[in-house]
Length: 111
Picture 1: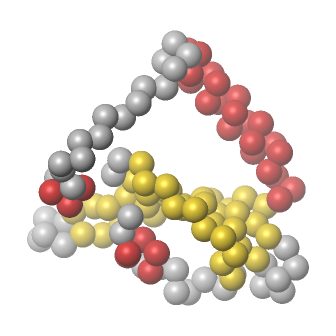
Picture 2: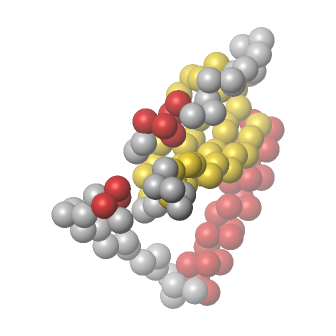
Picture 3: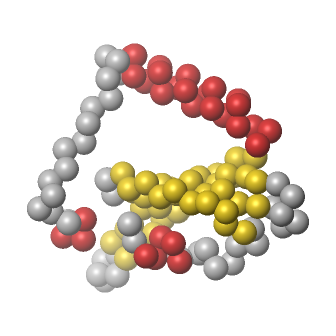
């Protein structure tokens, strides 16, 4: 995980963080963040994909894509996501998702 993933772009949020689960997946990091509404009356979920991009000058930036998921949509979202994942598993992978091979000798920054 990159410290910048936690800091960059998160200072200006109006919502309060309640819980966060970062997941490192190859060159991407996914953040599942539970937040409260401004009045602290309700919770909602943000899902953020963060991908580090190297610039030609040697610096880097992060491309981020975010969706907001509200509790009234949890069930339909979960059903739709499960249906699509099952479809992919059954039609592309033959029922199994390939496992990524990780080489512990190589750091992401070395790539």
